Length: 94
Image 1: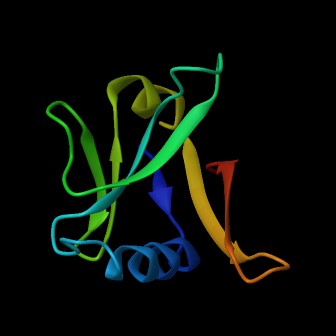
Image 2: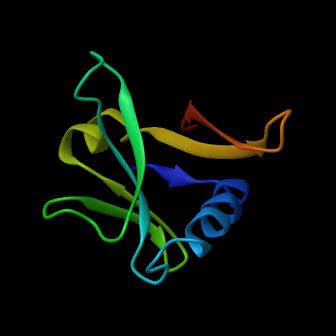
């Protein structure tokens, strides 16, 4: 299952703090409806039915079934980009 680094947890907590319902909100990965073999990332108020939930309160990530399969052996990390925005990176576990 997808794991989160400490940097990713902090970044997600920061992003979700501004969400309308931060206690139930999360970042949601789903397969892109417009690009083949691409993931779409969005901020959502709660997981969709069937989503897998990764992380804990304040730093939750929701994965649709296809994204969960693709990200099963991945680690999500985050760092500040050159302009101060958050950049997420995926790497293989281990």
